[in-house]
Length: 342
Image (cartoon, rainbow, N blue to C red; front, side, top):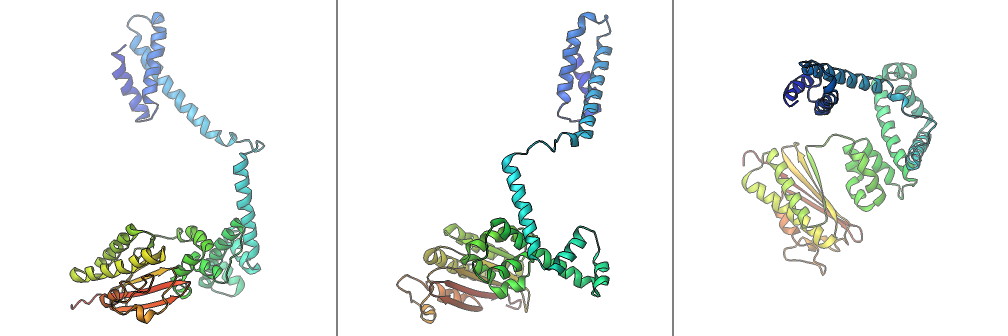
């Protein structure tokens, strides 16, 4: 019987390869040969084993094919689904319906004609006297709005401020210019609802290689922000002393967030106009700085310690600006340009 094992493994391997059931087929064959050995003629054990293993392989494939063909019948539509699954599906469908209802009639017509009826942008443009490009742009805006309205309907909430919808729409459409106009990152720091809803909106697009966003809440985040700035700066052409100066400035503004504002974020962006460079924007929702001018004086610190490191960060960067509002927080913007001649 032991002599049959290598032969059976070769036969099974030739027919099923590395299939998980390969060894089971060998063992089943041996079991059947052992069970029938008293009925097998002398000298016929090997042919019997070969026939048995081939039959087992054929049966396995037939069973697999039958299961595949009949898989659609395994679900009984009359059988009640898991209650939690059913509730989730109902809520999602209801949210989609409500979100569609919040679109304008024209937006719904064009979206459904394209997505459901399969109409292309050219035929839709001909119908309305527009252009295919204009219709495509309209569809993009409509999809972006639909995503926002769906999330709001799913959460069963209304935005707490007038800025919420424009910010969420700018995120959904990946409109960077509009996001800057609205100062979307700061709004996400201040609005818990939009911060929560922004995750699925921001997660849709491809990962950006020219910008890094680092939430700041603790000392390890300072290190992460500094490393991110260095990595982008190397791509911009920075080296040596310039890298050290940039990393130091980023550390200073990030450390202020941890020490005096509790939480915030640092955004590092790779620039190519008017020349290669790095822009750093640090935002927080702390108590703000009462006197920004004095905070930028060397050696000055408010009673709470705000302003620590800002004068030094300003000297290390080529461009520096700060906006602070008491009770709302502070935004520091810094830029370092790469001078190829230097």
